[in-house]
Length: 125
Image (tube, rainbow, N blue to C red; front, side, top):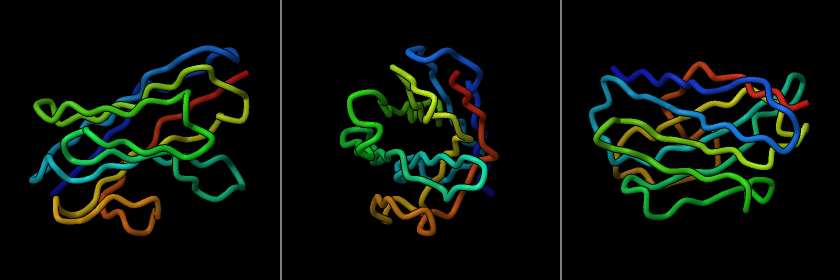
């Protein structure tokens, strides 16, 4: 039984920063690839980035490159998404997700992730 819980969202002005956290419980394999996605009302879920099990090879969507940073602390079973230079178009519900096992490769396709958090809202005005 794996549960992912996001936190750290909020309302900020354009140009501001936030750090989102995703805490895992009942997470059998801390080395699984984890991804971040976001979804605004009426829009499809959009890939933001992912990080491998050791946190050594993060990848980002074009919209996130240079502004967002993904990291992880496996000792705390937590993955982070640091949002910088935020823009109004970044407004969305942000979700973290995990692959089923450490043997599953990282992917930008949401349907390939097995575990999902409930989301945390980011609003940029």
